[in-house]
Length: 257
Length: 219
Image (tube, rainbow over all chains, first blue to last red; front, side, top):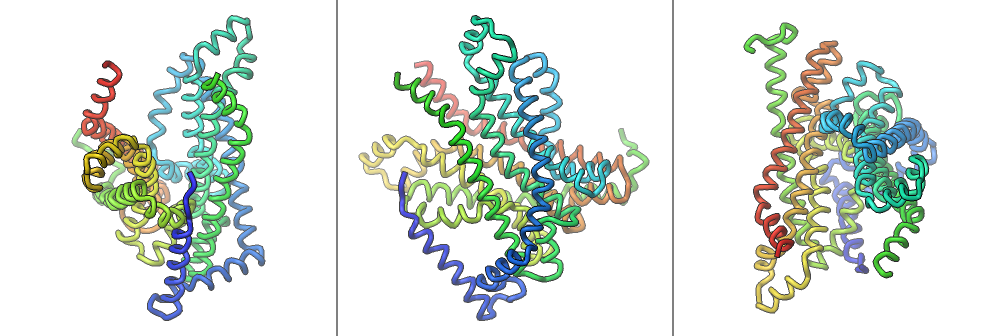
């Protein structure tokens, strides 16, 4: 569906210009809302001096392992729970009990066990990313057509082969959705842990800037974080459509025989 | 069970109660619900409104809301206004996107039929668009309730003197471990309860919807 974004882009520019004018004329205090151009300039300075890249690197050093643990565990357990009813019954109640816990509420608990360092943050990131991956994998596996599995059984395929050749490919779109949803959760929890107990990272940079009244730095941090969030999501959507293009081809062929 | 555990002093009990009471900050949720539904419906219904607002919203959406907590502290202080703003911000996007998609998925033939009968736009909105989009809108609201609770807790942990999030983190810092777990569990119960209440409300309010869906299948 194509549509003109022109009016919308004009609106964004007009709003930014109004902010700039309000701040420059002193109607809005500069200490609170600096002019947009100053924020941009500050952002470039922080980028060039390596402050922002270092902060992001620190955040990603925790984000990546936390996310990978969650992905491995979530997909693994999701496949097991989706395909073996006994394991589903074993874990389901536990999962349903733990899932409604706001992930932020476990931060203090984990702080108690793992301290304020990276271990705690990685754990919290992994915890939060785990549930969407687990649930979507499980649903993906459970909604596989029984015919597929029966066919595999007829050909006397072993469990491992059925899993690799049938279950995982058929459930992959839902697994991909879970993985994509979790990326933004990982980023949110990564920033949250830095706000609550930080020593470095982008969330810590933003909070420090606010506490020392460097408003331009703070906004620059928020804007870059928005850009990173957007790029992460974009990267996942692109990867998903690349990797799963065979899947779409298959379903279309099914519809148009 | 009238005797409280000895670890909990009367002052702490008081703190716990006022802490749980702070959940009214979820008022930010109602603000987001009204705004999100209104923008979603207007943008889904009027193409020019969509073109006008979509770039702005899509520009703001990728920013993790927690990163706005410092901004909100700077602009609004550490009190109620800040928390309500942060909660409203986080809740807006799920309500908005679910409403928008639900409105866009409304059967075009139905709307054209209504237009043929010279229904005015407000009448089409009230009689066709809103009822048909309501399941999607409810999904958005339910997702947002969870967001509201999470953001309330996070903003209390970062700033402020009261609230269940503050209660939990202060208990942890003071090494009052049973108290900390009590806070976490009560939060889990509140989260579970809220979700339950929403599902029940959804089923009640949308009963006609499910009923008509069933009728279609049967007939």
